[in-house]
Length: 163
Image (cartoon, rainbow, N blue to C red; front, side):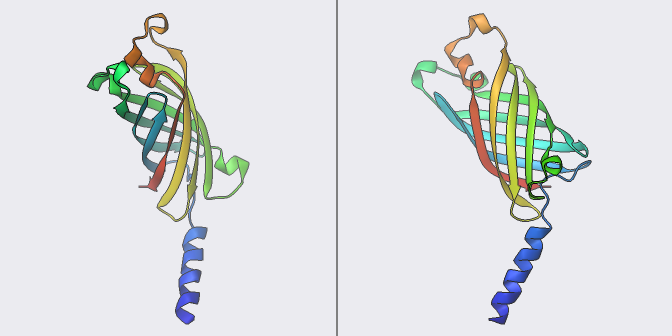
């Protein structure tokens, strides 16, 4: 019984110390699934805190499973984006382990927006979900079927780590 009480206390303390976004100098790494129409793949991102509620980062996704009708090669399946986030967790004050982050992203395939949420279970590990959407598509009048992969609404979900 004593061991169980000590374990529960230690877990409570470690969960209480978790913080979703710490501000300037904060480093986040996310990895997960990229879910969209006609393709599924992997998603990775890195965010660096510039201020109390602001971060910048890099995002990449690669479509592993693409419908045959799209006929996508390697260059069509991969996308790399630079992004800006407004980290609103401390403003909303829901829970110090929770962060809501809307933002904008720019890639070679489109200019878009995203809104995501993170929840940390410990100091270094949590889960995230993110929805991304194009605002402006490059060559919007001349999109090939393969260009559709990174020019649509997508959902990303997975694990987030403090670095």
